[in-house]
Amino acid sequence: MANETEVTSVLKDFFARPAEERQDFLQQTWCNQCMEMDLGMKNPQEYKAGERTWIEGDCVKCGTKIITEIVVEDDEE
Ligand SMILES: [Zn+2]
Image (cartoon, rainbow, N blue to C red; front, side, top):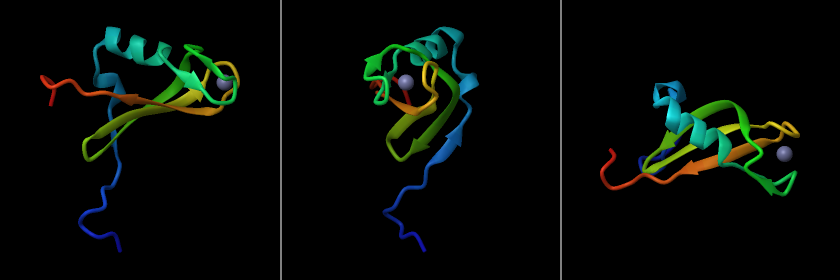
């Protein structure tokens, strides 16, 4: 059983974000496989666990799973 301090990741609705924001997140990527940035991401899924929010998807070039962490600004809850 998970204890109370452990956070479970929750699947969020990435497509609820504004189109502009989605585009940025899908373009600003880093792929460990290609060792290249900004190749792009497909099949995005947004997760949240505690204070952390990130987007998981597949590298457009090689299909490897990539993760983009979202840095939440102070004015955003
Ligand atoms: Zn790649």
